[in-house]
Image (cartoon, rainbow, N blue to C red; front, side, top):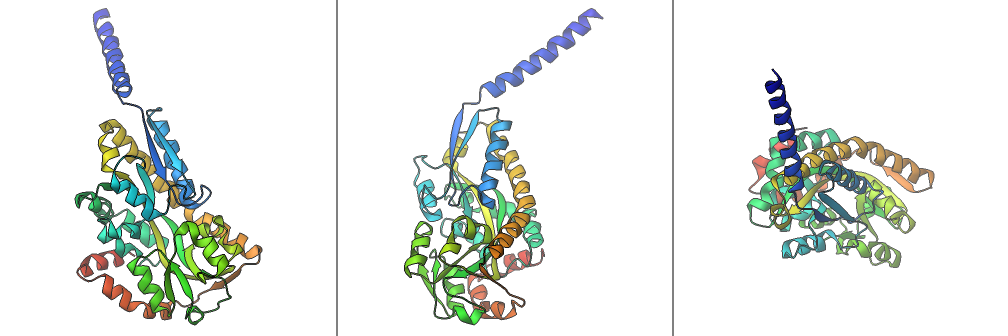
Length: 331
């Protein structure tokens, strides 16, 4: 009996030791994570939640170094750096549509105007088999990055320097875009002029009259202090800001299998965290903006907006009509 007990104890000790050795064998690594927006935004808070969970689960073998507020450049700048190699940026939170020119053609469907009718509709997509297909498309196309998880930063709305009360008021305005074909088409369909300005220069562009307005989710609008120079917000909700957190293949391949699993587990946690805070955080910011005297215009009927951009949807779903319909059917 004593021998059996001793054997069981030794077996447990060996198993524990093997687990400890496996963890110890993970080479410590620091992953640089780029975020265009400040840490107090929905996406900034999501980044922090991801960082904390990764570092907890890895017991310090993985450190996430968040570089926020656009210090590493715009989303396109970040993507160019990540795809260029060299390892200076390992991870980033990017808008799904930003991947369109980087091997993520399917992700463009997520940014088409009025695709998602509600947050629930988006999360139905994010929880579906389609989501994984979209996340891995850039990596499968040999681009050099892969998606880890989805989130969202709220519906995107137009904000302007001059007061607006309807869609017609946007006609003739110079509205900032990031040279995205969908956004270019959307702005043109509203009778406005798409004007390319980097995100880091947008505040001064609004201040100096280079552009008359732009569009962002509500939380980003306030955190970047755009209300100081463009105090008019029209809640058209043309796009739900679908986001992905991506990592370079170069960084991914240097991780152990255990570390890769930790990133995926932390990604699930951060995605759920994002889902829980997004709507309440957005509503809180909106109420604060109203209290501060920002001119907030509700859009009771988006039908005219949808009709105005119908050609944009048709043009950008060519060859992917069935896939787009699958997304619409998830509402």
